[in-house]
Length: 248
View 1 (cartoon, rainbow, N blue to C red):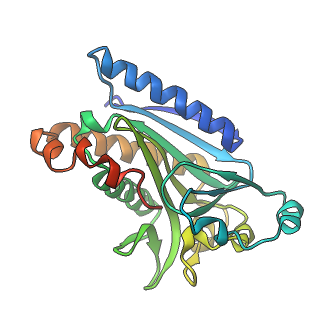
View 2: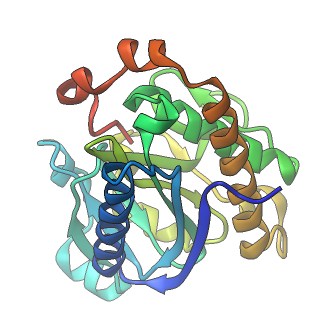
């Protein structure tokens, strides 16, 4: 079965460069809608150079706990971001996925879209034998016994109901870099990786990419089948000011 969402692997790219690439794809998906031939969207897969991204939430800058000198010594950049959420780390060994999806076509609002991303991550983890779960009080995906450790973060933004930003799964990043921040602003909550949970050598980054892309396409296909007018009325564009961007 052909994928509905095309997959574009960008390799290792700086955060700001990837942001500009996202914007170009958002414009193309919007243009397709406006031309009367809407497409479900695209999925950009990337690993970033080490970077801490800080949202526009007032408390977010205070969750970067490292000094400028320590950040420089670690080789970690800091960038402001317009996604939802708080403070997040990205770096090599972490799979960052940017779905550029037409949520109007899929009948999804901001909150239901974030739930879909969580489910895609949970499905991806299940492929390698990990049981991921949601925390009702904190967006993202966790593993282990409660309170658990966060293995994937989510932060999105919508532009005319086309999504940008997305999710990050810790495959095998430098976990010491998370000590530079209060991840997602959640003090006292742990973070983990697939390597920490499963050991050396598995799973591989290409394997996680393939799994994630497959599950995202499956959920998009399901939404296209189920989408109807009631979705748009209940969780549609009239809620944009309240619901976008979503929490990380």
